[in-house]
Structures are given as structure tokens and as C-alpha cells.
Length: 162
Picture 1 (cartoon, rainbow, N blue to C red):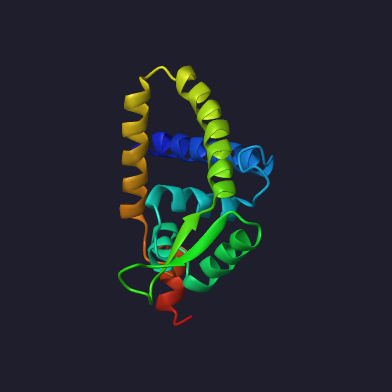
Picture 2 (tube, rainbow, N blue to C red; picture 1 turned 90 degrees about the horizontal axis):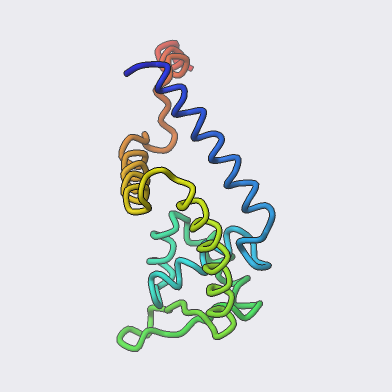
């Protein structure tokens, strides 16, 4: 692969990451909840009454981390836990009326921002979404398992027994 193209791609990804982090830090997108809580609320909305295990899998979080996030959202009245009707051992996570309002506000703010972004693009919104989805799939596929480093330095350290 052409190294100049690769480096330009990486530079653009870093700039995108910086822009996204700045946007999230401004708290305009999350309406008074943390970024983790925001992601949790939107995942509950998307999955529609997931179990805590389903939610943890979807968000890529361990159960204890997710449990703390859910507990915080329950305490502030945005989420509720209810036993599953068919299996009382399973607890379903749902949005409260206030949680629905918060998700709606988060979605409106972000839809407005990212609608403006898509209007600035030279490609059609459908093309951008398709390429972006492909980028995400490719990143997931290309990533190494956690704790695996295949850089030259890591490989040399492994060979030296470090």
C-alpha cells in the first residue's frame, strides 16, 4: 500500500477523533449525562428492552462496568429494570418517560449536527454512510485481539524473552 495514502488516512482519522472528542466534551450532545451514560441510553433505545447481558455485549463492556452505568441512570430516573415476563431470572432494561425525553433530545441535537456534516459532503449521504459502515467493519476485522502487539519492537521483545 502507498505509504503516503496510508499516512494521510491516519492523519484524517486523528483529526476526526479530535473533533468527535471535542464535540462530546462540550456536552451538547449528551444533555446532562456522561458520554458512557449517553451511549448506554441510546443502546437501550436501539435494542428495545435488552437484558443487562445483551446491553453489555452490544456496548462491548464488562458486566460490572455496565452495571454501574445502569445503576447511575436508574438513580437519576432515566432507566428502569423490570423482570422478563417469560424468565423471571432475566432483568430487562428500559427507558423511563424521562429517559425517552432525554434520548429524543440527544437524537435531535446529533441529527442536526450530523445532518449538517452530511450536507457538506461531496458524496451523497447514502454513499457516505455505506463507506463509513465499511470502514467500521474493516476496523473491527483488522484489529488484533486485546493484548496482542505485532509491532517490530513488541516482536523483538518477545524474541528476547521480555
